[in-house]
Amino acid sequence: MSAVLAVGLMSGTSMDGVDAALIETDGESLARPRAFLTIPYESAFRSRLASAVAAGRADAALVEELTHLHAGAVGRVLKEAGVESGTVALVGFHGHTVLHAPAERRTLQIGDGSLLARLTGIAVVGDFRSADVAAGGEGAPLAPVFHRALAALLEKPVAVLNIGGVANLTWIGRDESLIAFDTGPGNALIDDWALRHIGHPMDLDGALAAAGRVEESALAGLLADPYFKRRAPKSLDRNHFAGLAARLADLGPEDGAATLTEFTAAAVALAARQLPEPPRRWIVTGGGRRNPTLMAALARRLAVPVEPCESVGWDGDALEAQAFAYMAVRSAKGLPISYPETTGAPRAMTGGRLFKPAA
View: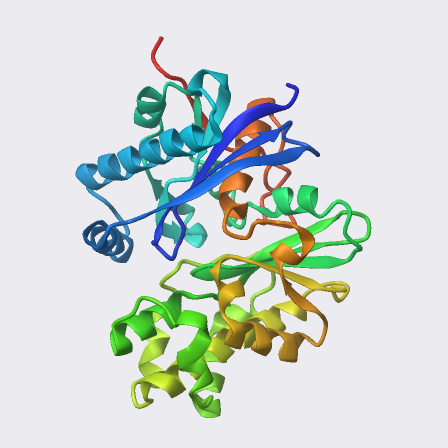
């Protein structure tokens, strides 16, 4: 398969909306961005989705609604790019994770791939994580294979740090070898704290945390979680640390935000100790790169350059959606998307299920 047009769709742990990216790619070295957009979720839908995540399951109505929202995102990104659906080879459909328990060999990303193929008229690759988890892997993170393609010209070793609801890193060695795992919390705990205490779903520009003081004893308690002693590869459910926020119940809004922001940065620093060679630089993607308080904490703890991915010409908003477009093409070609060093799978594995539109 030569380079083709593919759309990638991502609904991340922050639950803020659907990201849709159109790229041209051969699923190997080539990935040229063509268009990107985000369709925010309405608050009522976001609330229902959050309830499904809390319950670890979703009803058929929610699955159907989410799929229709994704179909709308496909139509809009193609319209923005001036591209006809008939010229697009594949849609990479991540769906939305409502349950991730790889130790129990269970992971669930809701979304109906067959319905999406019918709605868009384009072949869909979905269910990217199940095969890896069934084989004993963590099923996450999956983007490292795309990070490696993007970072081909960067000096190695380099680390790509994605800070969404959960944070994960990709380490790329001098020989292009990969190591990847979830470092710990990303934005999720900070977002939840801000919503609970100031009624805003995020700490905009890190202002709340910047006005506070880190409570060191509470931070030490958070960092005592057994997850940080586990060796990589390893991955997390968004809600893994949710119960730990009770440790901050006596803190005011500012000090709580400061402590949780430092928690995210400290977890990354702990993760860096597991890498075989220190990265020369950290390239940060995801919403966390927009939080100056968090970025400053990372730079202080990592003691090497920590830069938003735009500094190397990447679009940090589009990256995860682009990755699933890229992986859809790899899946169609039978190429691996996960490896023992990135998910703990027993071997390099392809992933994803193909759903064809009705004839």
